[in-house]
Amino acid sequence: MEMVKELNPALIKRKRNGQINIKSGNKIDAVVKWTIWILTFLTVLAFFVFDYTGFQIERAITETIHNIRVMFLEPGLSHFSWSEAVYQVGVTLGLGILATIFGAIIAFFLSLMAAENLSKSWLSNTVRIVVAFIRAVPTVLWVLIFAIAAGLGSEAAVLGMLFHSVAYLVKAFSESFEEVNPGIIEALRATGSSWWHIVVNGVLPSTFTYLLSWTFLRFEINFSVAVAMGAAAGAGGIGFELFMASGFYFDLREVGFITYAILVVAIVLEIISTRLKERYFPSSINS
Amino acid sequence: MNAKQMRKNKWQTTIFFILIIIVTYLSTAITKFNFIDSIATIPAAFSWIFSNLLITEESLEKLPQILEKLGETIFMSIAATTLAAVVSLFLAIMGSKTTKVNQTFSVIARFIASFSRNIPVVAWSLILLISFGQNSITGFLALFVATVGFLTRAFIESVDEANQSSVEALTATGATYFHMISKAVIPQSLPQMLSWILFMIETNIRSATLVGILTGTGIGYMFDLYYKNMNYNLVALITFTIIIAVIAIELISNRIRRVIL
Image 1 (cartoon, each protein chain N blue to C red):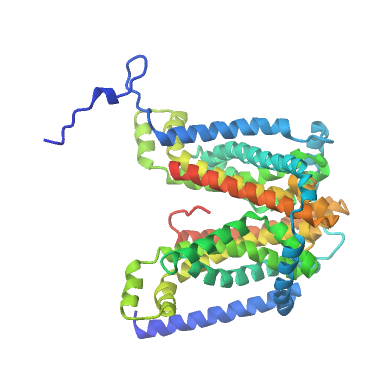
Image 2 (image 1 turned 120 degrees about the vertical axis):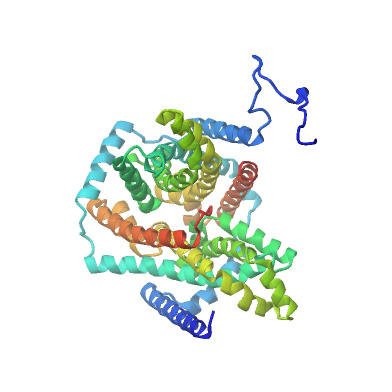
């Protein structure tokens, strides 16, 4: 019978002491091991490359502990009021919402072009390359570049954040579209429906909830991006107040208060998105 | 699906879209966002980009300096991610349902992770800047703290997904807790974890630019400096080198991922 195959002794690799080497030829193990070694090496190397200007470890650590204690145990407001703080959090949320909603609308059309089962291969490849390029530029650079043309303010911030949101969502959306049962598309095509009919009646109903959850996951990211843009690109909102409190007034109590405000919103958003993930993506999906 | 349900669904969709429109309107009001202005900005911005963001020969002279700072930024994000991964591994093993030692440690681990993840990296860098000063360590620590939070969550998921039967089998043979972790849990979840680490390195290079602008380190500082001096040729060159670096790292990690997953 074929079932009993004799193993060619030449193929069995043995260790020096005669044991069969069970790990030999396992490419996965080798790659994992090498990656870890290279990362360790680069990490050690990094500490020799770093620039240590003005770094005094003892002073830095005692000061940080003191600062963190003041921040988190005695938060308070001195340069603006509670209602102002709520308003600024609202501005940051608003920036995040605008970038997410506009991003989702644009990403929807682009991802139809990027999905391999709904589009031509040259078109889908072009969209993918453009999106990869956009994603490689950090959001803050987009915002700063737009700020030159539009002036500092919400327009530049939303446009800059929009670019990254679109790039992220196109990837997520087009992957959901590609998972649509090909039978549905084929059946609709056989009835002679147009491309637009296929999208509206075949693809959308089966992917709508996925699209919504991805959009919400992006909103969670966009909130922290909006905080960052306020601080680094003068886009306003709670991030700008944080930057002012720590960079200009050196008011640790206010920094603490603002940090708590951001933390509360971020945790609420995280709880909602974890629920969504558990409901719609039972097995975890990478990034 | 019967007709009644379909009608109900249609209603839900309509209400949902109306809600979205209201939320969008409120957001434009609170942020003073002008829709028409911003659409008008896009062509202006792009024509500005194409006429001003050009790499000239003059700016290429600064390339060695830029590459040095870019190298510092890449090292910063790799070091922050790798060391954060080590800490996250411990936190994840303590925090996961399958491998936790006891309930208290599990709650503490999850709390640390959530706390460091949800305070944005901006806040960490501003906090650390006050006491650590303007050097690589500040940027490194800010990225490190934020990465610990994110990786712990991802690692907990990977550890939870690890096959239970091998853990059970090892426990049945009388293996100690550390044997069980090192022979059953880690080998199974290592490729998944490595994939997350690579993803985080990519993300951190982008965040490092932001952190650099705020803390005055690495490539972010260079960008900010020339941006404020309105030397747009150098701004273009810096942006271009960042793009190259990010795409190169993405390609490398995609290749590694294809083998190990």
